[in-house]
Length: 105
Image (tube, rainbow, N blue to C red; front, side, top):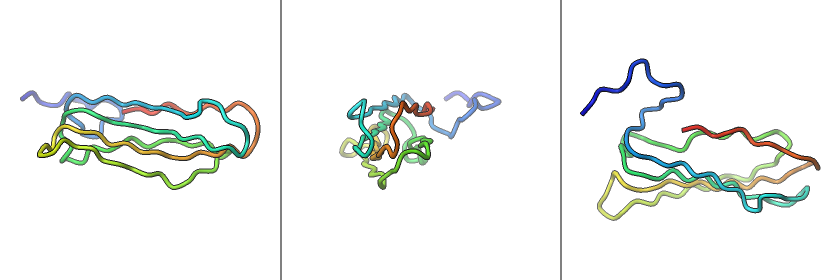
């Protein structure tokens, strides 16, 4: 076991292991008033029992949001290998191009 790097990297929340963060929008383009589902999935092997969670997302004020739904998927009998995913439904309230902020883990 090696010590954590000091000083801790910017945004470090205590996750130790091998993790992958995937972000997906379906559909990639929508019209005003049409829903878009933004899914974040964090998967891998690491210290999940220590409270590893999905990073926060910034949602522009021009989007209406519906309550996100989070799901946890872990292999039977394993506390250390699995995934957490969250779907948030975004509804554009005005026309035009929109850019979402990057999500960092």
